[in-house]
Length: 79
Image (cartoon, rainbow, N blue to C red; front, side):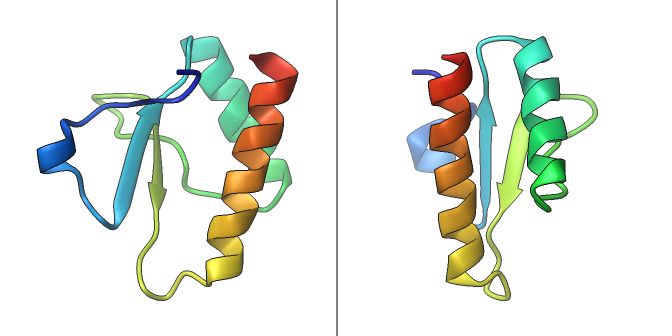
Protein backbone atom coordinates (compact mmCIF):
# COMPACT_ATOMS: atom_id res chain seq x y z
CA UNK A 1 0.00 0.00 0.00
CA UNK A 2 1.60 3.18 -1.08
CA UNK A 3 -1.69 4.17 -2.74
CA UNK A 4 -4.75 3.38 -0.65
CA UNK A 5 -8.30 3.42 -1.94
CA UNK A 6 -10.75 5.52 0.05
CA UNK A 7 -14.03 3.78 -0.80
CA UNK A 8 -15.24 0.27 0.02
CA UNK A 9 -14.95 -2.05 -2.99
CA UNK A 10 -18.73 -2.48 -3.26
CA UNK A 11 -19.24 1.30 -3.48
CA UNK A 12 -16.42 2.22 -5.88
CA UNK A 13 -17.10 4.21 -9.01
CA UNK A 14 -15.96 2.90 -12.39
CA UNK A 15 -15.30 6.47 -13.49
CA UNK A 16 -13.64 8.13 -10.49
CA UNK A 17 -10.69 6.51 -8.78
CA UNK A 18 -10.04 7.96 -5.34
CA UNK A 19 -6.91 7.25 -3.34
CA UNK A 20 -4.62 8.56 -0.62
CA UNK A 21 -0.86 8.58 -0.33
CA UNK A 22 1.07 8.02 2.93
CA UNK A 23 0.98 11.76 3.82
CA UNK A 24 -0.68 15.00 2.77
CA UNK A 25 2.76 16.34 1.85
CA UNK A 26 3.28 13.47 -0.59
CA UNK A 27 -0.20 14.04 -2.00
CA UNK A 28 0.64 17.69 -2.68
CA UNK A 29 3.93 16.68 -4.32
CA UNK A 30 2.15 13.99 -6.37
CA UNK A 31 -0.40 16.50 -7.65
CA UNK A 32 2.31 19.06 -8.40
CA UNK A 33 4.55 16.59 -10.24
CA UNK A 34 1.60 15.16 -12.17
CA UNK A 35 0.64 18.66 -13.30
CA UNK A 36 4.16 19.13 -14.70
CA UNK A 37 3.48 16.01 -16.79
CA UNK A 38 0.25 17.52 -18.11
CA UNK A 39 -2.02 15.56 -15.77
CA UNK A 40 -4.51 17.96 -14.25
CA UNK A 41 -7.51 17.63 -11.96
CA UNK A 42 -6.04 14.98 -9.68
CA UNK A 43 -6.68 16.85 -6.46
CA UNK A 44 -9.42 15.22 -4.41
CA UNK A 45 -12.55 16.84 -3.01
CA UNK A 46 -11.87 19.94 -0.92
CA UNK A 47 -13.63 18.46 2.14
CA UNK A 48 -12.14 14.95 1.86
CA UNK A 49 -8.68 15.51 0.44
CA UNK A 50 -6.63 12.83 -1.23
CA UNK A 51 -6.49 12.32 -4.97
CA UNK A 52 -9.09 11.54 -7.61
CA UNK A 53 -8.51 10.39 -11.18
CA UNK A 54 -11.52 10.67 -13.47
CA UNK A 55 -11.56 8.12 -16.28
CA UNK A 56 -14.65 9.01 -18.26
CA UNK A 57 -15.25 7.58 -21.74
CA UNK A 58 -13.63 10.54 -23.46
CA UNK A 59 -10.32 9.87 -21.71
CA UNK A 60 -7.99 8.11 -24.15
CA UNK A 61 -6.57 4.79 -23.01
CA UNK A 62 -3.08 6.23 -23.49
CA UNK A 63 -3.84 8.80 -20.78
CA UNK A 64 -4.80 6.05 -18.32
CA UNK A 65 -1.57 4.22 -19.15
CA UNK A 66 0.42 7.44 -18.68
CA UNK A 67 -1.13 7.96 -15.24
CA UNK A 68 -0.37 4.37 -14.24
CA UNK A 69 3.26 4.75 -15.33
CA UNK A 70 3.56 8.08 -13.50
CA UNK A 71 2.14 6.48 -10.34
CA UNK A 72 4.65 3.61 -10.53
CA UNK A 73 7.53 6.03 -11.03
CA UNK A 74 6.38 8.32 -8.22
CA UNK A 75 6.11 5.38 -5.84
CA UNK A 76 9.61 4.18 -6.75
CA UNK A 77 11.02 7.65 -6.04
CA UNK A 78 9.10 8.33 -2.83
CA UNK A 79 7.96 4.98 -1.47
